[in-house]
Every structure is written in structure tokens, then in C-alpha cells.
Length: 202
Image (cartoon, rainbow, N blue to C red; front, top):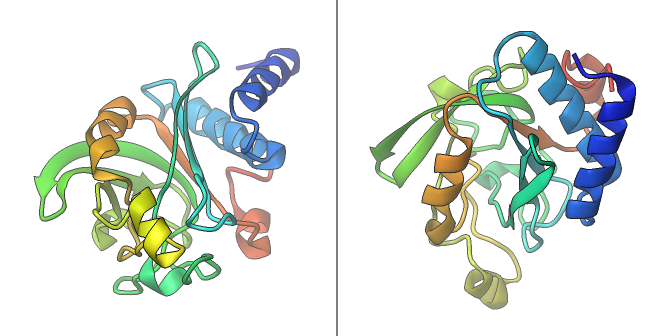
């Protein structure tokens, strides 16, 4: 287990690497990673953070290599059609909700599906994202996640709940984070933050 000084130094290094990621969100994400790691769920020291409180026209997904405290990717990510328009404000764990889900995930295996190369996500938080696999909430590439789309419409297109990324980045990001790393999807939702087994120790 990490001691507090090493956690603090890692937090500071990651903050310097990703100044646009709120310190509080990063702190919660590291707490979630630490908890998942203690439970023996983490097989790859990579942390992906999504901040759904930011507009979809802003880069709001970060991928870190925690072994060297380095930022690997910072890019756009879509939210679900029923989570909101420019901003996401509604989240769901229900089938057919077409909404994004909050919380801590472990990345699973990849497959080629209707959206091309895709990554299964296992939600760890009961009642918040533990239906992700059955809902087919996966990471995949999508044509509506691009700067051109933002220029035309002022926002990204929306998914059916999946954290979709730009098609040119889908394969490299998925290959970086697949098979047992942590993905942490944040929004300042009081209900989730007060009930989550992964954030309340931060």
C-alpha cells in the first residue's frame, strides 16, 4: 500500500502533467485506483479519468501511466444521449437508458463490433455502473467525436451511454488501457459521492 507522502508526490506530478484536470477529481480517481488495487483488481498501472462535469466541447478524458506519473492522452469523450446535450447532468445504470454511468471501472477485453474495435468495461459500483457489461457500455471510436464536429455544432455528438472517443485514437487508447486498468468517470453527484465505496476514503 502507498504511504501518504508517495501518494502526495504522485498527485503533484500528475497535476503538473494535466493542469486542466481538477485536483479534486484527480484525488478521487487516485483513491478509487488505490482501492481497486487493494482488492486485487488492477493488473495494469494505468488510470483513465473522465470528468463529465466539463462540456463535451472540452477535452475531458485523461490517461496516465502511474508507474512514471506521465500523461499519455488528453482528449475528447462523448456522453450518452440521455445524459444531456452540451453538458451531461443525468446518469443511469439502467438498461436502455442511453445515459452515461458514473464511477469506477476495470477495463476488460477487446472485440470488434458494430462500432469497430471496442473495449468492454466492468463497472465496480453497485447501483451506479455495475450493469455496464450487460448494457454494452464500452469504449469505442465514433465519427461524431472530433474537433470538426465541435466546430459545426458547438458540441460532440452523443452515444448510447458509451465513452466514445475519436476514431483515430480509439485503437491506441484501447490498447493502452485494456486488460485490467482503472477507468474513473466523475461528476459532482452527491448521491454517488456519498455512497461510493471507491471515493469516500479520499
